[in-house]
Length: 163
Ligand SMILES: Nc1[nH]c(=O)nc2c1ncn2[C@H]1C[C@H](O)[C@@H](COP(=O)(O)OP(=O)(O)OP(=O)(O)O)O1
Figure (cartoon, rainbow, N blue to C red):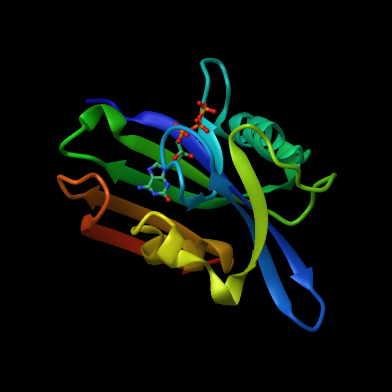
């Protein structure tokens, strides 16, 4: 079955004297409800991945990011063998430049986290395999296969390179 195209976009900022932070958010509805997730969502018909990422960041957190300020951080295939209709091909972006302050939406409660203290225990279990590299400037290529529970990780094949 063809996987659905989705995006995740990680805004990064430097806190002088403290370290880099990344904007994540508590998912209030739908897929992944109750977890801390990256901002993002489905690529709609006629959109590029970058256009979808910018739209989703605005819809979910009220922040304006320009496509030219996105950096490609790789691609993850999430494979749900028990629910193949959930399979997602996920383009990752980061950005260090945007306009506005994060505001809560109907979907997400945005929150900054130190890159050195990612809330991995509150995220999808697979995030530990790819998120640290993606927010540390790497380009990640991963295939994450979930177990029958659609939660825990059956296998994770991944590589990351620095750019
Ligand atoms: N195993 C997994 N680990 C992870 O960290 N994120 C995952 C994941 N499987 C899916 N995602 C992410 C990718 C994508 O951004 C998001 C898709 O969830 P949603 O259906 O909630 O999207 P949205 O509801 O935001 O989309 P729209 O309906 O287009 O707004 O979930």
